[in-house]
Image (cartoon, rainbow, N blue to C red; front, side):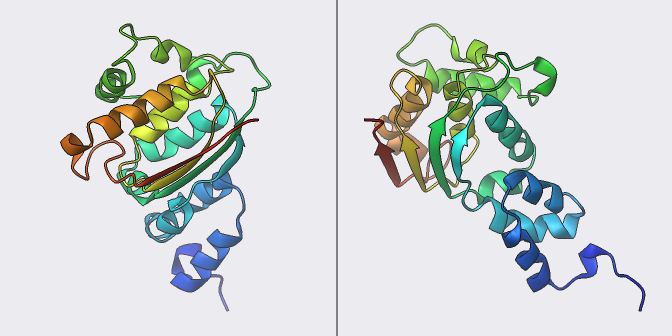
Length: 192
């Protein structure tokens, strides 16, 4: 019997393979094999994105994939965020960062800097020890996000916290669409 390509496998087998891959990176690569796999694997892979520990490199890599794939962004409904950790390298090099549309940056900037005045979060996207700017961007590009768990780390969550605050304060303007327009629950866990 000749070997069949992966995309010819029944949907149940493809989903089973995807659920047994523990790393989101492995699931992303598996989904990218062909369009049929992407259409099948994407919803079960992205529905929850769980990051027990994360650094800026993890977040930038994670953002790069869904940022340019609308279906992936729409699939994420639950985001448990654990403890931010330091990257092994101190600065993220620009060649390792995803290409972020100026329109997206301007919109996130407007929400994040409502209280700050000056725009500093975009500079901090390139700082190796500050995950918060990346979390703010991640929250912005996930319009279907319904719930999130968040380990509160003082002084490391100001941008993302402001983004959530702005959405809550202006909830009537979003009416179920836009950044965090479907957000129903935010569970904050303390560090102490």
